[in-house]
Image (cartoon, rainbow, N blue to C red; front, side):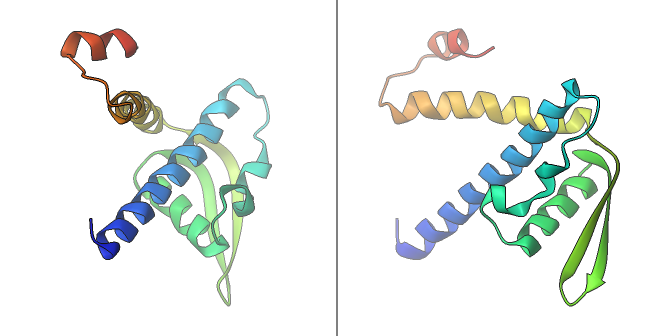
Length: 124
């Protein structure tokens, strides 16, 4: 793989990892009576504030999360206003699908020969 393809692949993997982690945080909030707004701290995801805001906007537009309003305050500064933040069924489906794909990927990375029956035995 040449350098530009590898960089693009790494950036895509970072995107998927961050999106997954944001959704996973929302999913964990299902058991809490009040939403932990610390999940809106972009620093815990190791991305810039602007990138984090854009990820949230994408997740809202894709229907993966709800109950958040993002207000642009000017000069590339944003305010996140939660009014009833929650993960949607679509967001939960994304987590479930990606969790299964990670399991399969980990098996394949191990160099194991995988059959359909072997793969299905490790998947929920």
